[in-house]
Length: 76
Image (tube, rainbow, N blue to C red; front, side):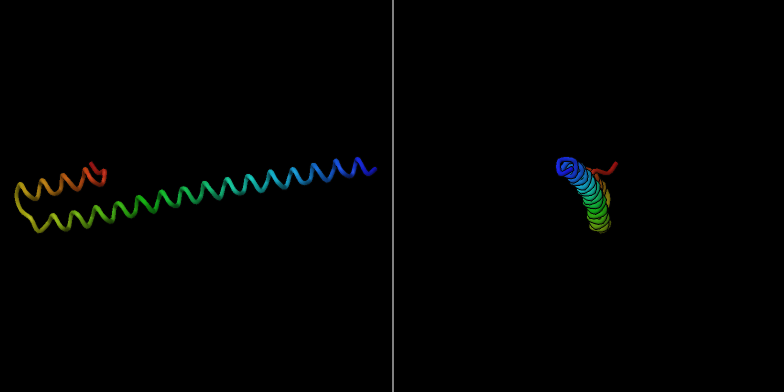
């Protein structure tokens, strides 16, 4: 009976460990997704600021500024 109880306890502990590992993995994925989304939002905000700075320019200089901002922030 003691051996069987030990086996049952070991299986129960393994289940808990598996659930904890899955939960950690899900949490890590969620954190990674949140970080990636925040990075995109920050880059978009910086891009908009760069475009505002380009608006004070005119002609070819403005076109060059906008092109540089697009390249820098990965926009097409």
